[in-house]
Image 1 (cartoon, helix red, strand yellow):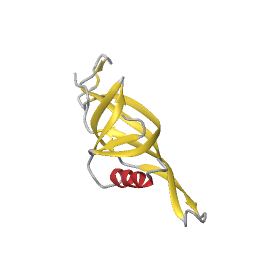
Image 2 (cartoon, helix red, strand yellow; image 1 turned 135 degrees about the vertical axis):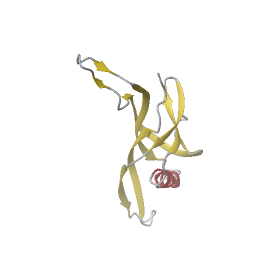
Image 3 (spheres, helix red, strand yellow; image 1 turned 90 degrees about the horizontal axis):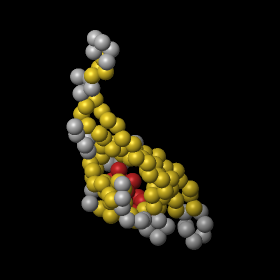
Length: 133
């Protein structure tokens, strides 16, 4: 992941990632559960890697923020994104169900009345496990 860039669906956008967190979920199938002896039987599907991130616009490229918002809020089944993983990057298919940001309306003479959106936070959930047993 380049500093100041986000890659989504093959598009590279100039944004600042101000916070990124990753989570993992070792997920069981419906065939998992307690057996008669109360020992847990696990039928593991695999490990899912999920990310949450906060994004700020680059003041030199405000249209990239708008483009990113339009892409992630589109009614698409999934998106391909690149995330940091270990000391490298991980490209994966994720779905996004919601996001949130805020606006400050700039009415200064030089701005002429512009919406300054910022603080976009999203959750990116893996479409399939990255690791399988």
